[in-house]
Length: 249
Image: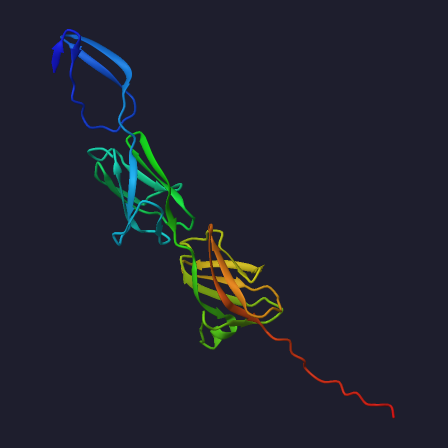
């Protein structure tokens, strides 16, 4: 709207770009000024999980594939190539909903607390310590001897292994990652001789030698650790025969 020879009024259109120039046309002449206007950076306030729980602190997620809704402001009045990521991983899919919300299908992962970043146009808004993945959990154990007999030990029992080690124990649980995230396991304070990731719910530990009683088992997936106490014990020492001693009288 023209007001005078020295001023006019403009109602800006929606946008999400960075600093922009302003140009005014009067007749056939154009005057402009660079880096005059910018749009607000996207801001994030809440994260809503699939169950409808709202978090303004850390939202805890399974190992991947969860659809979360991110609430905030300045996300644009239409889809401006919006994208979102948790930590350094982009969401598997991002869908713009409104100027204040979008949905993100999280990528798989096992890390601790991570920031969430949203890109709208060329502007980026972030919030720290917004999302974390569930820690690994263990609930069942099977060693190679019991597997042959078709028996399964649970966390209330114990997997017994020979003192010399070298026994493979299958550790079953959840949130061990959808890939091998430097997965490692240990019995007591001793790392397994070898750990092999099998799936999000199981990995194999080749036990080291030992002589202690009942020990806990701990699994590390990424930066998260899950453990269960009194899970494994070593065989009690056995004596195979006796030595007969006679007197000299």
